[in-house]
Image 1 (cartoon, helix red, strand yellow):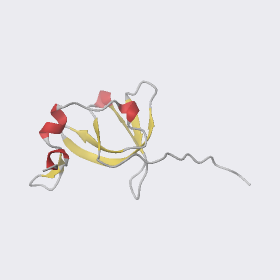
Image 2 (cartoon, helix red, strand yellow):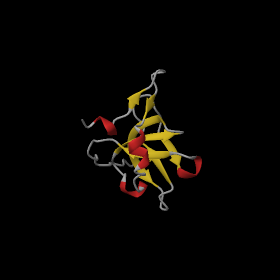
Image 3 (cartoon, helix red, strand yellow):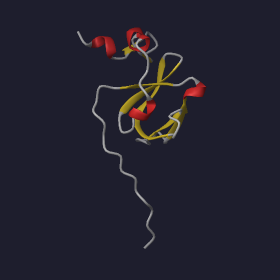
Length: 100
């Protein structure tokens, strides 16, 4: 019970999102700021991370850098689908460079 929304491993070990999740549609990208999300391409999860910025038209978003993964931009026009994980959003903190 409850597993219908979790990614499942296929035989190659790559994550696949359950069909029922995709059938219900995607979330408005402007609502994902601060949320942990799965970024999909062709039905496969290609990145998981926190959204730290969304474009004004909500047609693209940035996933924050984490560990060895660099900050990356994903856009609807390139076929990316973004789905939230089950975790709560985290506060976004932007640091300004200071030269002292």
